Length: 288
Image (cartoon, rainbow, N blue to C red; front, side, top):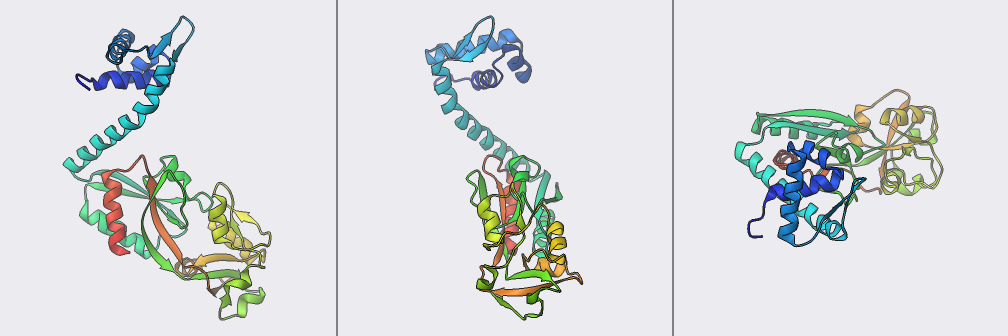
């Protein structure tokens, strides 16, 4: 580690990504000759060739491949630590993009209000995410964090505070045999068509929200689902606040006994945790 130069490591990572000295230089805002100079210095420090360069292509040597595999996670962790310290030093500011699935209920709005009061220098944006893609917006960086329906079993996502635990209802057409019932048993749903989310929602998530063996339509949005419910194509499980919010004359909501409660959770990408995200997680936890 003696005399280790971060710029040499940055140069090697850029070159490994681009496999082109000119593009690596453009990415680092240095000349192509400076890239070569930094690479040679790193190779002397390590004592092995890391990159092979010919007139036709640039590629990593076996030593370079091994070094990259070990270096990248350590470098990304170091960068995240520096970013976190920088944010903490200047306070929570900038912009926080918050995704929500289904309905932005009172608990979520309470958490957002508390966060804004505590961190007035940080602007919040609230973005609805598709019912059928609860995790995509976080993965692709469209939002910094999202409030989604459980379960969450994604290895690249962090599941933060849980909140808004609510009993479940099944939405059915007013013409459905269940429509006049005061309540239902969970077992009665296993032979009932239940409308579920379509891909890319993972299979385990779709099955949790439509525990039925009877084929039924799959939908991308909650409104599509409720439209099919009204048309008599099947039932759809919803939590009580969502059922109240989406009340309509051609659909009725019947409480279901014996199902796990519907629970919301805050998620964010494991590699994109910031002080803003952590501060919002504290606000969500405080209203849970």
